[in-house]
Length: 390
Ligand SMILES: Cc1cc2nc3c(=O)[nH]c(=O)nc-3n(C[C@H](O)[C@H](O)[C@H](O)COP(=O)(O)O)c2cc1C
Image 1 (cartoon, helix red, strand yellow):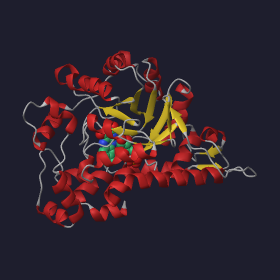
Image 2: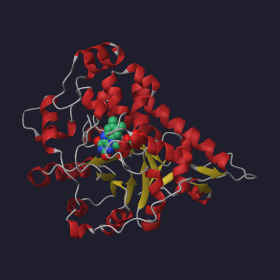
Image 3: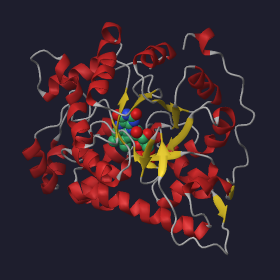
Image 4: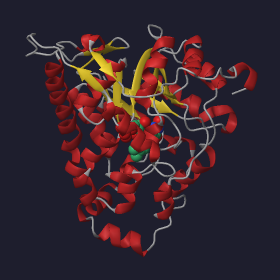
């Protein structure tokens, strides 16, 4: 993150690092992970820990993937391609955002065995664009679809507003100064040109300038992924279907009733709702409710091999990281994300040996303490989705 900060303009770094409101939720994710203690077991030969993890019928090098990140090209030009290539090389899942800067067809060619696609709701014309992207995902050979539920409305990210990072973009003299101080980023951006939301280009007859595409996305990509839309996509998509942003056990239960294959417990890395609990604090409650019926995955400040281990010991089946991978790309260019994946792998191997487990599958057998005085065991019964029309 430090090196990325030096190499890219401030508005790009703020977009990467920042969150909603006062950014308390980002801190909450971090503090909750830091508070976890694991009692190690000794006297075992743990010299060759096995990290391979099977998820939805595919083997991955470790239980970690790359979270979807839209507009990644702002942080480093062509970052989607670099992230996808690194994921393919290191055999970890790459979740392409719907609002990526390379389209799904290109990414599926770069990362054929590890690519997943994340979708938002585009309500215009009876969800024509969202549903068409499901068809494109089938044709491109995408392995899993991820629907993000935690963005029912766009929220204020104060750093972005302050930096003029709006649609349309409002550069100031400060922007010019920031860009001038980031020559490597500027040269790379000039070479690759301004990023645009590539997946949307086919739906804009003729008007393909980045500003036109951004205007379309700004006008039409608004509103919740409703349970009704989840059902429609479930009927259309035969492959693994995952809901991202699930936090309440009743929502997890409802997802399972709709034959969802997995959930990613997530608060969008603190970018949507500052009052959201730390994702890690919800694992046990959600696990109690849907274990064995859906894969339980998690993201939000999973920024080291030790964080991955903690998540698994607390009950997650798989984890994802976002910012670190994009920061690695900004810091080191195309070599960055594979370098980071290898760091995660080496760290995970090290902490598994130290904690006394030789196989990823054995992590839940370790004893841990979450250090929380209050958990969410006194959850209020929720209104049923059927009654509220949610
Ligand atoms: C720059 C950036 C863009 C993001 N864009 C998306 C997106 O398009 N879709 C999505 O579901 N989540 C998006 N997220 C949230 C991530 O998928 C993920 O939930 C979060 O970053 C995890 O926290 P971490 O960055 O601390 O690992 C974005 C996050 C960042 C940092």
